[in-house]
Picture 1 (cartoon, rainbow, N blue to C red):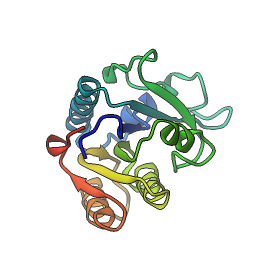
Picture 2: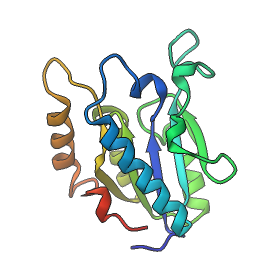
Picture 3: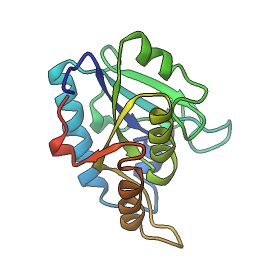
Picture 4: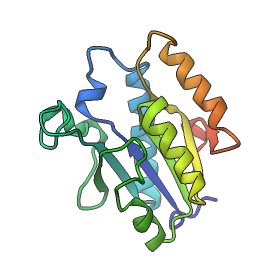
Length: 178
């Protein structure tokens, strides 16, 4: 399970407009630090790092090229080494070449982290599992904002419990090995 040729890290929507939203994501500094550690570990072992960037329609705050659309520089992604791709749907596979890219490289295990838990993280975990990939969700490396129904803490805990087993293995980032 720790063969870097068969594992990849997928960071979802860690963008200025979401991370620096007026409604701050829950535990955003901790989540960012955990993602940074996962990136460092993936780079150190030669596992590919991919970053999905949600792209809104023209005129939206996260339209291509806008400041809010940019990935966080704190991720220290290297476009010469890391794969950055755009998506327009919650599922990172829909309308992208992600599945083809993973298949061409023999990737069978996808480690997932990022934003927002109940949308893009959830949809991508389910889709990865449906596509026959081993999905590993970093339990402490995804986040969202409070809603009128649930706190972000509750949303993250609910998704960690719901996705675990049926759709993903859920582990703290400190226990993930590439």
